[in-house]
Image 1 (cartoon, rainbow, N blue to C red):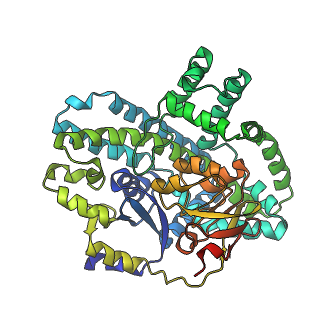
Image 2: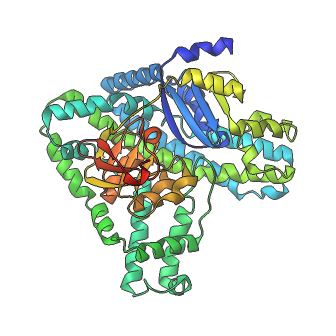
Image 3: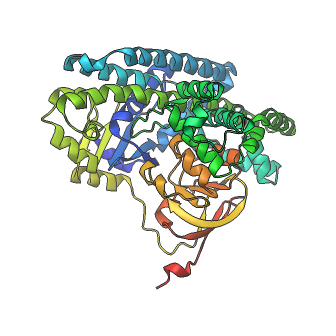
Length: 496
């Protein structure tokens, strides 16, 4: 570890979420290889730490600031640079997904191990290439948000002005999917089928056709960095039934979704009052990078189906659990099945270091935990009664906390609970629909939690850094999102 011990002296941004190496090594490689190759600047290192399918993705603050500086300089040199990024990313994403779909058409059950190994390597190369441009997003969002907040506050007093100025210029793919499903719900209600069973809904040919079309378009929507989930038509009918059973106001969501042009007109009007060119430039860059960021997430989520398709066949050939192969590197496939005990250890604790032009360095067990402890220098948190973060969606509510550190814990969420998470991903949407409010450790003004919370019209406090460490299931909290404050209320049930 001597040659990389310098990494423990660096300052890091920690991004925590559910994930496994097999579905995240492509993005890690891309940071130190594909991004520099395409943009001529990128990251000097990427570190991933895993423990029981929970991942911490580490970005060096020096890299983030350098990338932001490069972006700002190129933007100042040519306003067309944003258009170049936007179109290049779109081209890369479409090209990559086309190649993935070709892989998906092959009958892998009859393929040889050599063919499977080659395909898995190619899939990882595609997955890395997919992010050649979009890794620029974090360099900007993580280093400029406080600047944007400060500059806006100097001009406008209300949180609503800040939220309006940072309203994305397009709907997220998660919102588009939900909107289309709400339109189907409207059609079902119009035909008086909201109270019939699943077969009754699907017996209507027009409705069934719309659901099938929706399923073909969004069967991948619950894929995550831990696994793929193929949704069939009945899964979407179940979601529609839940909408009716809970009395969800889908008409309100439809109206809010369709009001985006009005919001953007208000945003444009407000921006005309801004004379600070630095702020105008930052808002313009933020608008473009939101599109790139959302596209990245959409295409990555789709790609996971194809990555796991090949990995499942390899697991089947060796009759070993897929969960073990989630911790293998492409170059290690030929070590199967002897490497299986090592993979089992990696699931408990492992750390991967990606450097330019080098094979990943892997630390397992106590070595991984020791390295991780040197990187993660957070001090113990004691006697916290108030948590501060940033407002992402206004409102004030009181409710019961449910801490969901990963997808497997989302089943805890009941209607009206307050969702607490490191960050949210598309697979969190069903839980967010139940939530009275959302609190996250991480995230910015255009993160998943912020955008969805605004569209669901629920309070949201982001960037608390400590919410998942301080709060526990059953805690009663007051969320004053307008002020970015979460207050822990003494719960008599927990006394003594």
